[in-house]
Image (spheres, rainbow, N blue to C red):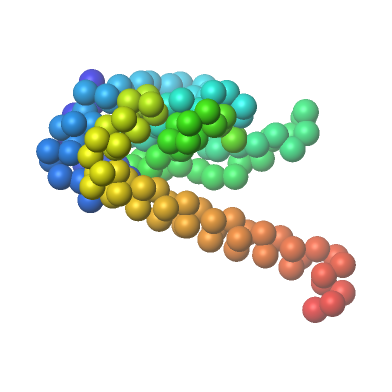
Length: 158
């Protein structure tokens, strides 16, 4: 079972009051996954928001039938499965446990209903989500630029 203390360790909830967390707690389930177990697969219905309590989760995409690449590593305190906050949106990657993991989960429709009822909480959640997405985009951009700078055709121009 999840606790208020568990929710306080989630980055997405950093600006929320104990009263807000008490509203979220009944929606939250604690789930356990084994190493190499999939939390979800790319293309699955994106209906649950996940927050890592313990362990490590890799977000992966298939680049061919034989090859998957890791595009992100989720550490404790961080969220994944944001598609649950966009109605009718599928997950855009696989979420695979790199080690035994404990994950908090919230059904997206229930969470969005709560955020619609409490606009201030909704604002803080969306602000936190934007910060997470900004950080991930900056890291991906840096990775892309580094990769492109090593491309043979670009090396000739440098």
